[in-house]
Length: 184
Length: 246
Image (tube, rainbow over all chains, first blue to last red; front, side):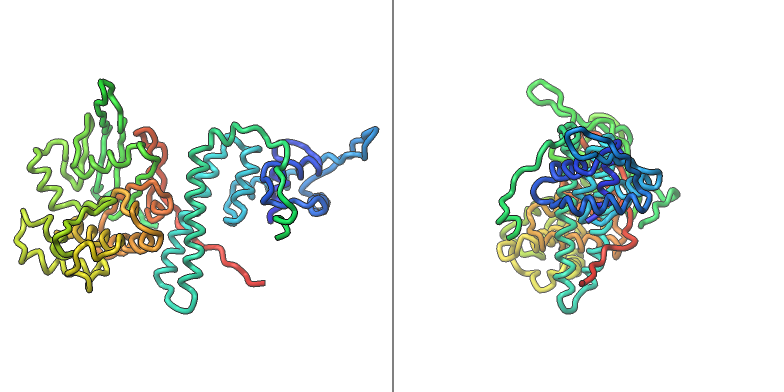
């Protein structure tokens, strides 16, 4: 989900390399979000082919060479659009996690904007719910209404705590999760 | 989205309204120099955490309280200049008030509860046809003769709304109206507010800490520490996310 955009957005704060980007995402989002290294490197390679990033090789004596990635102008546009434009509800957590790091001064305004859009969606869902009478439609809409309500309450909490959230240092490592739990 | 007309007289105008209370020798500022205008026909949500000034603001608009300074004009009437008796009459005639707990009288039926609040101003025979009609509007046509004990929380709140609408007020003020309701009753009540607004042309002001309730509004005003920290028109959703079965 939105891995390419999240990687591009992380690069808004400056050049980095694949491992660091992956480690940051894993550490910031914790055990509920999977970030596979193979997918990260494939995505970064595709981003380079598509002209979203450029890479330069840095030699290291005792370790493999490191590829430092920089956003191109086009990449910057993609990153900013994803971070601050309208986006799918299920990407909100990742967007705000990245926004906390790269645009901390606009974090609360972004949370407010997302909440406003979510409230508009909730209004529309309620309109549709008033008209829905057949089959499982009312319940399918109720499920989306419940999700939107829950998102709005969570976003209100995030906004209330924004000063503390933005001040929190960048996470250094991911908390553990039992593999049995992860694979079910 | 509702278009706000600059030409129409506003339903509510607050100008530099402040309200302070004395508490143990200290002055506690509940509302600090708040100015705002609410248009007729608009649904406005007043949000903010507990203690932010929502209820104080609503009470001032309802004429249940008087500001320490500033002016409160509601439906063209300057409430700060009214004597207590005139204020009570204005409230009874022009405003509908809905609270978290409708405080229904236990010995009376739903119908009698709707009528009771206006009996000092109007005869029962004149009130009853409208009360019956309103109970039907709020979906309680078959429960008019039930006492509060035989109604659910959502139904009791609907009786409270019918009571608030008796006498055709132009302004409906609701303070945490869904605070005691379960999820299903909350959604039903919010739908009812929207229907009432569009069918009766009501101006609705809802104070709520819950952003999911505030989402019914055209406009959301957020208070913090007795000040307005945000005032925004709710965008309308052009489209909603549609899932694809794969």
